[in-house]
Amino acid sequence: MISFSLRCRPAAHAFDGWFRSGEDFERQASAGLLECPICGASDVSKALMKPAVAASAKMKAPGAVAGEPSQPVGEFANAEAAKAIAKLQAMARELRAKSDYVGPKFAEEARRIHYGESEHRQIYGEASAREVKGLSEEGIAAFPLPGLPEDKN
View 1 (tube, rainbow, N blue to C red):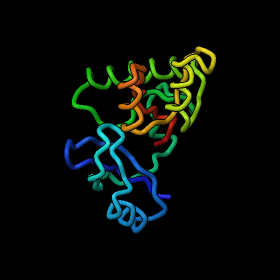
View 2 (cartoon, rainbow, N blue to C red; view 1 turned 45 degrees about the vertical axis):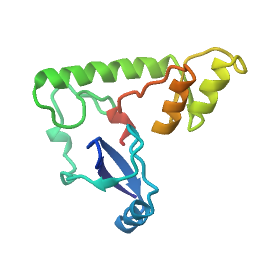
View 3 (cartoon, rainbow, N blue to C red; view 1 turned 180 degrees about the vertical axis):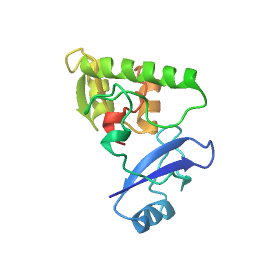
């Protein structure tokens, strides 16, 4: 599997995608099968990527513990931005810890809860931009959680 940094052309939203090969990405992109998770645009291209270089244990950040995320992944304009992302990621971890994971059936389960067909509880999972827009139109609150380093996405 290959992870590509992607960008929708209309709004320049950045996101990641996993593919079997570069040819698989090209086939899906030319067929219009890719979709921006933020705006739903199907005009998606590869973004410029940094090479993936494995760091040795000696290069690990001071105070970091193996298996525990310490800093947000990626580069930020300044320390303030990095701190803000770290706070958002901490909130996302807390929300996930206090919610039920429903996977790709998020939109379906959110509707069932909203209409009283399932027990009332906090949930999280996956949904396309189109599904989230549909939920919003029905008056069902849903918002994306920031990615976490431990998601490795």
